[in-house]
Image (cartoon, rainbow, N blue to C red; front, side, top):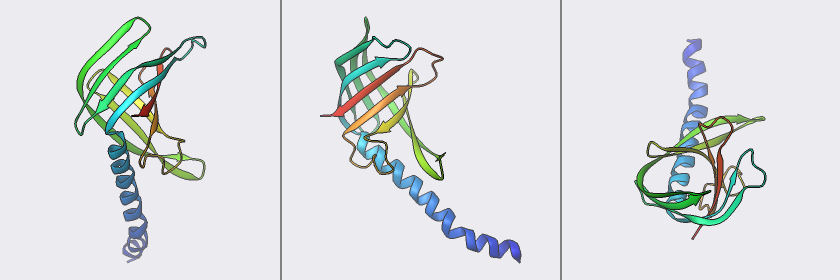
Length: 145
């Protein structure tokens, strides 16, 4: 009986958490679709490396077309993309953490706008931090066109 009562008390909180996460992901999916200019790129561990206005990424509902240059390497093509959301602890709160996977080549952490809880809604700016690299990775700054 105690287990049923405990479950009944926790059910509203569980449903709010699940709904909140799915709303965040829907907002982020809607925001990422569109045409983005890569306005700046920085390379970790190299304070003197910065490039500006290096290319673009255009996201449709399932694919991304990209064309940009980092150092002396050019990247161009079209691939599928997937955005995942995970709720992580941040102090006394949980916040959404977004991960963007482009095909089988790149994986990025995304920070929308100013990084506040509702920044994924109608985002006009995003920062992509390359994952799966030990120490030498890129940070790309994008603005919606």
